[in-house]
Image (cartoon, rainbow, N blue to C red; front, side, top):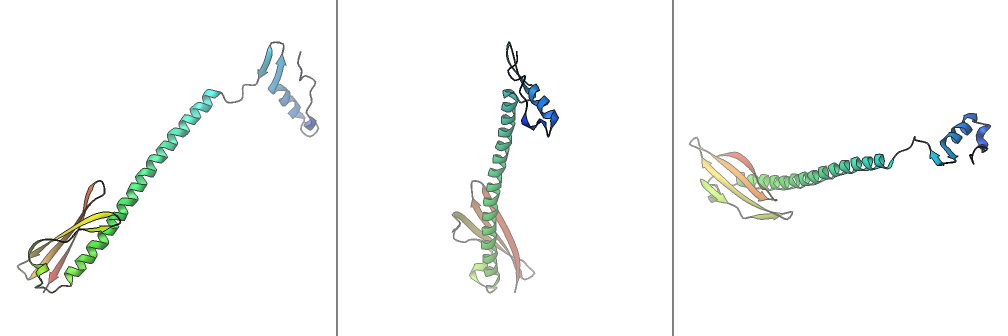
Amino acid sequence: MSILKDWHCPCTITYPKHNSQRSNQITINQGGIKLNKKGFTLIEVLIGLILLAIGLLAIAGMQITAVRGNFFSHYLTQASYFGQDRLEFLDNLSYSSNELLAGNHNDPATTISGIVFNPSYTVVDDPNGYKIIYYTIRWNDGVNRNISFSTIRSQ
């Protein structure tokens, strides 16, 4: 005997198929409740959540990589500004300045944005009457890094 057998949906007037679809979804038999089999099972929901979690972990890993890349880019930009500025200074010195004598020279370490930059440069006298200046900046942000610039200075 079905309890819902005589139940009719009030919207049967506007949508006659609705009542028949509704009555097929839940029926009560003598043996108990029988539900339709068109829904999701708990296992399907858990598998969906696992796939979502794996996707979110991948996105989190990409986020960490992006943050590291941004920090590296920032430090590289700071080192570039510092190196270009110092190279322009050396390029504007008189040709016979002590700072432009041939050999290796160390500039004092400079801290920019919390990172210590260690600059040094090498001056090479060319027999054709000009000097080549190689300027290198080293720093460590968890990895040893450096950037180099060069210029030619004539008399």
